[in-house]
Amino acid sequence: MNAGVRIPRPGSREAAERFTDRVADYVRYRPGYPRALIDHLRDREALAPLDIVADIGSGTGISSELFLDAGCEVHAVEPNAAMREAAERRLGDRASFHSIAASAEATTLPDAGIDLVAAGTAFHWFDRERARAEFARIQRRDGHVALFWNVRSLDSDFMHGYEALLRANCAEYAATNARERANETAMKAFFGAGFIEHAQFPNPQSLDFDALRGRLLSSSYSPPPGDPTHAPLIEGLRALFELRAREGRIAMLYDTHLYLGRLET
Image 1 (cartoon, rainbow, N blue to C red):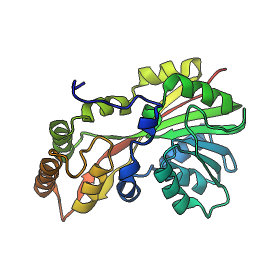
Image 2 (cartoon, rainbow, N blue to C red):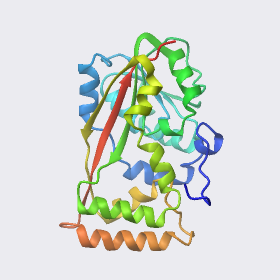
Image 3 (tube, rainbow, N blue to C red):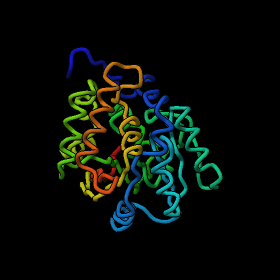
């Protein structure tokens, strides 16, 4: 890790406030999750219509909406007020959506009442041991835990160029990226004997330049306007887009990685 970079401790208040000034870009430009994720959870009997889902670190409601559309009741647990309010604007008129101002380590949910504990592109911000204990407490005896991330692929010249651009211009990128790409060994250690599987699903985005710029600026590691590295980053992004775009759009390639299991108490 770069010695001059300070990353918030997982589970801390600073980590919870990480995206406060990025909510608008997060809402507009962050990728969702593929329907294949829901289908897979159903095939594994980890999810069914009318199930009660705790969406932990629910942010602006991207994963909550996926579970609502699957017919579930969703308790969206999010400590960041700006992100939680964005989710409430998006989903607040749905009777099965419940917004909760709480953290992964202290959800305020009752014991053994949740069929599926889920975290979408959020788990790396949690205090792992405290979150594990909390997930085990709220999970039903026959319930499941699903942790999933959208992870960028490097299967194109554009994606290789984008990776290089981040590493050259975003001082925090290497540190946060290492956490986001949770590997199977770490997830097996988290679940212990209750680990079931690792699965992945393609999840590409097609973006014009404004959307690509917004997607980048929604990331916690991107330097904000006014930072001396912001302008070179955006200039490099523009040059990369103009080199690789086809008909004014670029394919941002993701795979959604799912880690599924149960937690033994």
